[in-house]
Length: 386
Image (cartoon, rainbow, N blue to C red; front, side, top):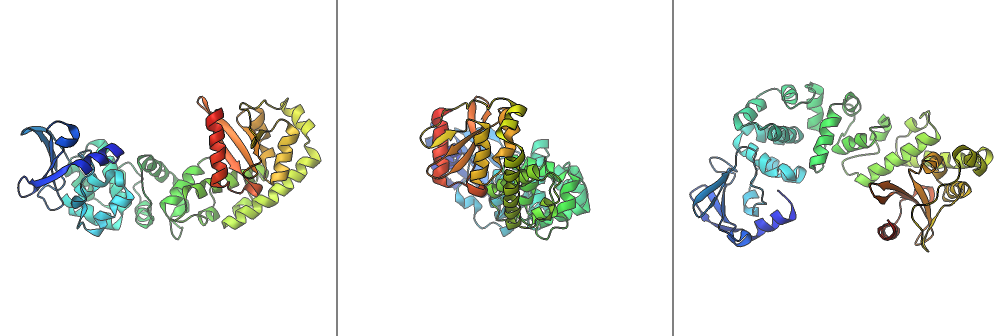
């Protein structure tokens, strides 16, 4: 309902006089090049957000409950809404029309939008998939919160109902609502979040990123509702590196801040690289893994492929990170490693996805994030070479 073509369609439609006291007519003829009108009721109509379409006076289609017309409506339809309903557009834009329809028609839905908007969003998404009618939706809303959760396929616990009320929300897309559903099924989600002071959807995204690794209580303190996705990716990368260098996790689980995590990582890198120099030489890697793999892509004046086990170890030593711990992945050709000299020093790892080579990671000294200029140079190199 929100792609570019549909936005253009809505912008070029022409609101006309009311077809009757409740229906507003949108003439789309000039855009679609054949006569078609869509009539929609607003918030105060007897059947709010009902819609129907016609051509030359002949009916074409009529929307049912939780069925959107497939177009972005003029701003007038979204004015003077109750605050709880209006805020749903920021949180769940893909389901905004359906959410408004539910809130306008069923008072309990509007109450839920104010008290636990995530539960309402999950309800609408589930009801839409299951083809519920308005009576089924209203009957579910009349149940206790724990029973509603059971009805929509989630654990029916009072603890989960309370957690959904407390979660700070960030915008939800279709893939993300699947992640939310999967995460809320996991006991570890409740065990960690129900005692956290300020749980947010970012904690859900964090635990999804860490689904193959253990999440500890201190890690949750490194994330809040303002955390950006790339910061969550950084947290996982740092944690995975630390687990590779110190597998028992004792030191990792003591960290409580991002600074703690960075400092622990840096100490382990120094220790790891010193140990590599002392007991795991390039000759030992060659005996263990064989010849160093040939790079799949040629370099250029800025980006040079590493060509030996000695240079792999040297790269970790001079860049102060643990690329040497990825020797097994290099040997099995899951990644190939390059060094960038300009516009700034970076270690670059590429991996093959489908038929193309793509960037897996790029890090500066002590795992620093690369600049936008350096990343652009990497992507340009890949676009030409891959």
